Every structure is written in C-alpha cells, then in structure tokens.
Amino acid sequence: MFGGDERGGEWPRGEEPEARACCYSGKAADMRARRTARVMVFDPAGRVLLIRCGVMRGDGEFVFWLTPGGEIEAGETPAQAAVRELGEELGLSVEVVGPVYEEVTQFEHQGEMRDNLDFVFVAQCGAEAPVLRGVTVEEIAIMKEIRWWGVAEVEASVERIFPVDLATRMREFGCGEWEIEADSLRE
Image (cartoon, rainbow, N blue to C red; front, side):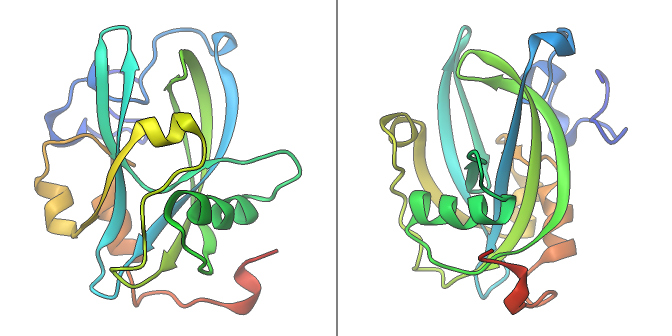
C-alpha cells in the first residue's frame, strides 16, 4: 500500500504515507473491525460540509477534515446510522441517499488500529442549517469546527481531507445530480 493509495493511485496533494490516517504497516490481526456511516452533505451551491478534527497521537496532534458520520451501532442499518449521526453531530434532520459507495481504510482511532468500512451517503441542507455540537465528551473535544468546501478549495488545500478523493466524489455525487427518493432512507 505504500507509494500509492488503496485504489492504486499516487498520494494526493503530495502527502507521504505516514501523514495519511489510513496507513498502517502492521498485521490485519492487530486491527479491530469498524463499520461507519459517512455523509457528504451538500448545500444549494454544491459545496460539501466538512468537520475539522484534532486527535492526539503518540507523535502529537493529528488534524484533519472529514465528512460527518460515525460508527454504526448494534442493530442499526448504515442508513439509520447516517441519519442519527447527522442529528447528533450537526442538529440536522434530513433524508440521506445511498450508500452511494463504500470505502475500506485502515487507521488509528482511540489508540487502536482499525480496519474500517465506510458506507457513504449523500444529503442536502441549507448552508445555515448545520450547527456543530457532538454528543459525547470525546466528540466535543475532537470536533473543532465545520466549514463548507467547494471542489476547487478541496483540490487546492494542503490540509488532510478524508476521503482523500473527495473532489472526485463531489463531482460524481454533487448537489443536483441525484434526488432524494422516499424509499432511500429512514428505514
């Protein structure tokens, strides 16, 4: 996996493998399986909402931007988790569509290596609707701010942004290119 991303491409924005959250040179047996629901939330202008997070690691603070979402709880479908996470993290009550794709990554989370499967959804809301709030003390400590990003901003950024191919995904699933379907969610 070193020398390129998990899809076989080069590291985006010139990042070295040790700078990416999804890189790990240990054995798969050392990792805990984790399933998450992530949501690309678009505003009417086609921008996507990201949360800036900072977590402490052995070598200092690891700061990154990512799409809203979190771990799927026992007995919960990925779609139900996506809706719940938007409510908990951002106070949003919106429909989600998908999953539009799935992504497998490995990274350190809470001091352990995780073998992660993301179910990625899309949703829409007004630019003023989300309010960063979090539920647990840990979430509140980790989540620093929210910001709307356009494709050009994502491409030009030198900050860590996950998923690493977000600009491509924004073009693929951007606002206006999909519609909310009644049976798409809230299972």
